[in-house]
Length: 252
Image 1 (tube, rainbow, N blue to C red):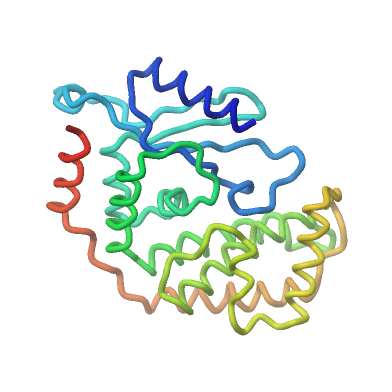
Image 2: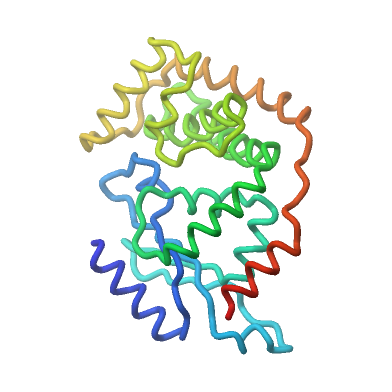
């Protein structure tokens, strides 16, 4: 599949006359808990020739290619990437930390990561993960019988909130790395580990009885972070001059 993805990226670059600077996997495969039927969500950053950015008319700043049911590819132009970086966009920050990289310009991505480290907005990140957790919790886990695999889609953003509060850093992308957090009880980790083993083994984790221990933990954390995030200060945005310098360097 890696070869198929790399070939698809090469074809997109030729057809669109772009240079792909960075391409990674996002979603459940990057998080470390894909299902057997999970598709591949490939995300990339690209640049065009300098004259493209000098046009007066509005031009698209992203590309989307739903290749087939198995493969979905989309990318952001350099200018869009930097505007979103200034806002501490959580999706972009996860792409920059993805453990599955298909293509990269090493100098570009090293400089972009250094730039991103100057713009850590804890409040924005926690709001993002909190809303993700709350939405999935309401939709999938507030019943007597639940889609058991959906626990991962609530646990991961909740643990990400805990990571930000504990370490004042962007949380790791991979789910298992979040399990080193302090204050996670042995009993809770045992329940999570058992679910993770079943999911990796390919067991069908569909409708089962809700797991009270996990629901209690999630209820407590969601209530806590709903109040905690309100008291955080919003970080100032990254200086526009620094972003402009980066843009001008890489557009040339």
